Image 1 (cartoon, rainbow, N blue to C red):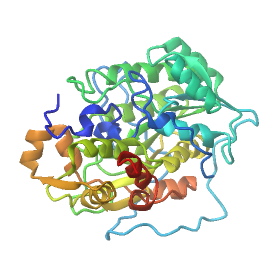
Image 2: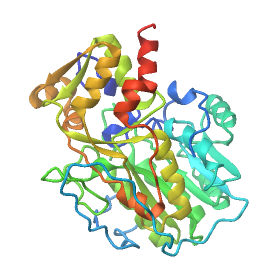
Image 3: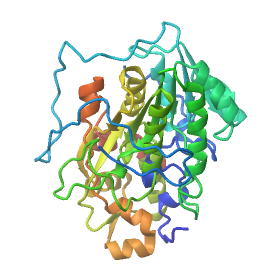
Image 4: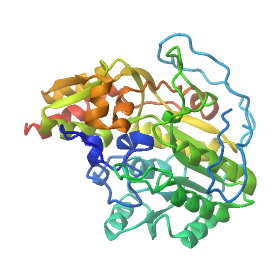
Length: 415
């Protein structure tokens, strides 16, 4: 239990992928109903590490070798990435899927999942059928409203997951059994159930060379000692905020062992947009407490990505990605916590309170204090280069000051 007298929004939100599942509301799919934000009727959207598997794994498997050479480009400057001109010739791609093709989605009623439902039927993805795991009549209605066929079950419905995976042309898993705020760790109440669900998917995809993309996160990387960007080949944090990296490693090895194209999409700590996810939760809490909180001056940089762009990356991964690949869902890497929370405070009309690291640990708890005080600059260059991913959503500061979060501030202030 987190001890936070200012009612930290992290304490009340079960949406963290690593800790920052707060900022991506997919991951309460297994235990909680979808959030208020995920119920919005959204308009159509715009078109090597080595990790030892945990002891519960059924097989003594190791991280597969990447199918593409590592990205050896090093970033020596704090800068955003210019537009990239892609060559007209591309490396050989996986076999194209049939004209009639089905997507099986786990976690489809949440924040990213809702946007993914809109994009999946559009070019270049062109799925003709979307079937999505659904736990309740409410999520049935939500999924059907957004064009998907609800399939009753949860992450423990292994036979259903296997059957649906076998019949699908691609599988995307945005769900996790972990609930942020529970006293037990991810290793105890999250990892075993997630691994069992991945085994069920693997049983359906075995020998097919079909794609599976799993949601992971960029906080698994150790921060660069000189503040530079990290990439998909960077070392894993030896003392991570959360042990989600174990599931990341497991799914890649599982695909190599059983003959399907397993991939990991590593989400930025802050997935934002449409007035939702973690930023919206922070704003609702700050409206009540009168302040946002930063740690140690708030000068650390974090990684951000718009929800529409994150959803599009999952679809590009299953359409174009190779076996064993990992991709960072990262649009910006230079925004600081101070800039972000300062902008939120400005539009909401509240103040920012800065805590020392020691004060943060005492008042927020170790996990939250680390989340708000950890540098994370994960480059999204590989996804741009390999998949042709082009993030096009508004930047996070723009969306706060003049976009969806300004509108949310008006609503919260009764304007």
